[in-house]
Image 1 (tube, rainbow, N blue to C red):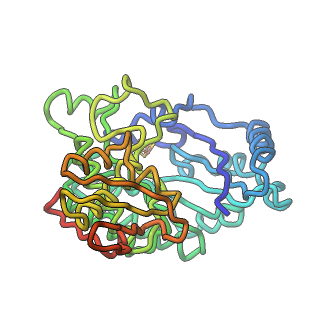
Image 2 (image 1 turned 45 degrees about the vertical axis):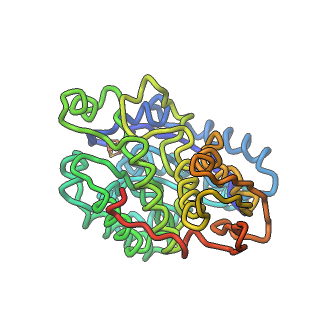
Image 3 (image 1 turned 90 degrees about the vertical axis):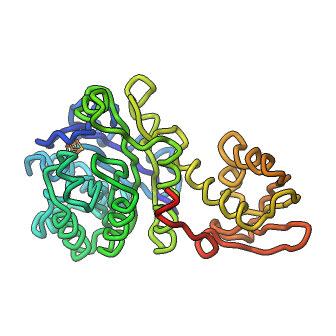
Length: 349
Ligand code: SF4
């Protein structure tokens, strides 16, 4: 059963770095204060009452958890200990930088119930990391992932396609390297230019051009497809709209409030284009959970099929897997898989 996440944003806390893209206060929508023990307990109780039977996961997002002084990390984790013992809280997740992870500290976190660590890997290309002011190298990300996995903790990687100096090939190589290193899940956050950041200055000076939305969707579709082929879940694509992001804070870049849906829709639309000749009528069956992805944001897939002369009807079919479509045309009825029957080339992005 999918856990309910109780989020705590620890904006910029503990982080001595200033990555060129980062304005943690904007991204997290938090005010920079650490949650007190009382607030942690109160919020968990509140969420517990609405979670019903679903497991509860406490997540410390943003900032750099393991760069906080150890006594503060202890203070944040302390109120969770009795709740973990009582089974009120099932798991604890933190996010941090790869260069603030070592075997001893991962063991310390594990003893205090941390079961998932998300790393801000961003890229596995050292020149991209340097151009983005990250202050760490790719080898540190590999070490961190291995450390976490050796301790039996789940490891996640956040990747940021479109950073300064990045290319589609470099983004794909980054994804493949974190998968090979053994991550359990991935988040993809295409780079956006936020007001007040160094990236905004470079953008305004004509020194940096971010991915457009269209290109970003194509690149994310390729990355998602590779992750699906490897069996690694991509649990989020694009920054969340409800965390302080709005039209005023975003200057440029690949951002849309439903970016994940745009990307998944691209995969299904490509499958339909591949197997439905133009000018035909088609009935497309999909898993009910994927209905809106197959139809597209604002019915864009249906409309784009119409533009190529395809009248497409979409019908839910619970017998299908999430990644499957059964396509019925005038001549055939066949089940295809986004994973097995689509082939992307880096040159298409
Ligand atoms: S390490 Fe994270 S919190 Fe620190 S500046 Fe970079 S993105 Fe922001």
